[in-house]
Length: 175
Image (spheres, rainbow, N blue to C red):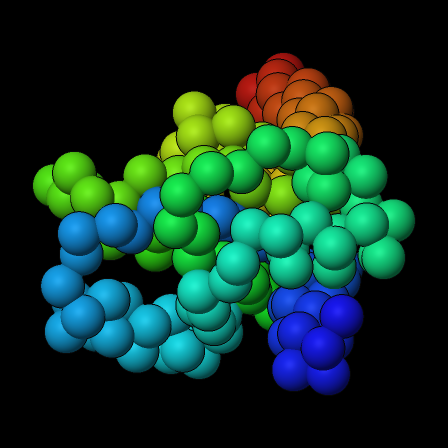
């Protein structure tokens, strides 16, 4: 393999190693639209990059990283590799937003934490709430039992106070 190709394989390996990856087709897409998409991906909220990669070099890089599922997946046509360092949900949302209304753009597959996802699975991932929202929901679920326990214990103490208050009121009326 020529040194340029080896260098490209190293770059692809850096893009796919332990990162969420989405592979899309882009044939027929205008360059200015594609460049605008790349600029959107580089925003800090998404923190991703989009590179056009040859399918063969992608397979070689995946094989060298031990990603056999990706290496053995047949890929055809133009492939753009979108790789993010951040939240895979935000990445999938950005791709779904870009692909909406564009026939030229189709998701081929995704790789999240070593698992291959189909186009439908990738869009299902995009439908999930963001990481922050999910963490807030989990925190709410964890706090709910403690809050309910406090309310139950408080109700028992309050009921004792009500009984004593009624007793004292009745004693005051009798005397």
